[in-house]
Image (cartoon, rainbow, N blue to C red):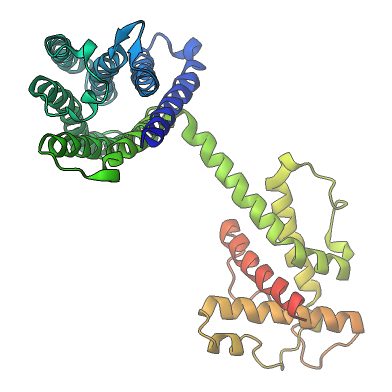
Length: 387
């Protein structure tokens, strides 16, 4: 179980350091912003908390003092929760009100830290086994120390969760609204950590062994901190991530359309205005537009070879439980395949689709057009393999 606990601490620490480094890249343009400075301090405290946690799992002493890493982890965790609450205030509350409430949280954090230090020293924390600070081991002073620490973590989780919803509805910035929603999720996960940690402490005090379920608190802690790290940085990477996802979707569609485009290009080379492969990968949006246009042009060239008198090629597929849209895609893919065969053979049907357009498809909506052609191309590829 120690391995799993250590791994959870390492995951939380790495996510904290990643968030800190990412935010430090913005130091030149943002350092004068109070909210930014508070955020950097919060991330530093977050890094310190889980670094001390990882150290505590590996050695019983730090700087030659027994259990000092545990005490520093708990004190920095209190400061971290206070700083996270102050960030929320700076994000969502007018400056004067935020400053007044921040002072309250600072005083509370200092008082809790002093109380934890006093309890740690009175309980002779430097000379106790490190395992005592995991479950309390039935020692009254250690139990009080641990429960005070848990309360210091649980209360900010509740207040942050209660505030994030109204603040998210008040703000007009989409990125901030998303950050607040993610922060509320992190607060819920971290509250579950507090709950599980309390269960671990109380069951140990009552002599109940819950076995592997003790690890639930460590898992919730790692997940909560990972979510929290994302919420504290989302405003700066959300736009880039959205662009990356759009690029990935476009690239997937571009590749999916290739088999259909290739066969239409071989049948009608004139549909291509530029030599294939002449555009770079950075021109993906342009290349996708060209591919859609070229498929439609190739499709038009095939209309004299599409037999209007042929039975609905998609009817059989619909009987198998396929949706209406899939049945239509199957029908059009089958028509294209039949028309390509007819053009290669030089056979023009007596009743051909040599006029008209594309059966109620909205070609002005590019996204819808790509989605539809991707469905047709997918069915066409399956038909080509089956044939």
